[in-house]
Amino acid sequence: MENIAIVEKNGSNYVLLEVSGTINSYTYTEFQAKVYALIKQTNLVLDLSRVTNLSSSGLGVLMSALDDGEETGNKLYVMKPSEVVRLAIESTGFSEMFTVIYSLTEVV
Amino acid sequence: MNAQRGIVLTTDLSNLIVLENFISGCLFLDGNEMNRAKLLATEFFDNIVIHSVHGLCGEVSITVRKIKARITLILKYSTKNFGKMLNALDTTNPHYDVKSLRYRGLGLRMCRNLASDIHYKKGLFKSSIIIIL
Image (cartoon, rainbow over the protein chains, first blue to last red):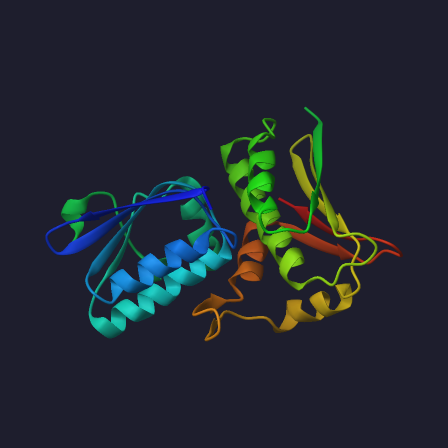
């Protein structure tokens, strides 16, 4: 599972996960566990600028996290998506569901 | 410029990484083409590994071909349930799966939107998925 790396950082009213590598069926379990645990506690910012591939399994996790955040009142932000991440999100037709930001100052 | 590269992979999810690296090495594709090819090839490979009942051998051959501006991905493999996959094309929609705790059924939707055309060809020994970018 060395093909994905996740660095966790705490902000004032959010947790930032800096993700690098690929999110696919082989690697997504650690990503899923972290995202689901954190979105229940606080706002979550996912820096996806260094993600090299995002499969439908990874997108499925993001969409479920949106639901969880809605239930708990926490917000999920996708920060600086790489081109392949942007393309993957757009290809689902659900891009309007995601809040995309380019700086941590945009976290409300 | 015409170019072609191919690879044969065993049906193991760990080979998703190998496949991504293979597509990244197709330097005849530009950035956007490479990203689309990567998303499409890995989605179909993932689907084959998870859902296909393997026939003669558990291998998938993947070819990336560029002839003038036309880019084609071909996945060829031996399977016993190609028809079942074809049926699923019409019935699979995004849905929440309580077992995996995530939304599923997004892959097909992604592929349909990323490709300009997708053909499915059932062969005597090997079946093919032909994707036109």
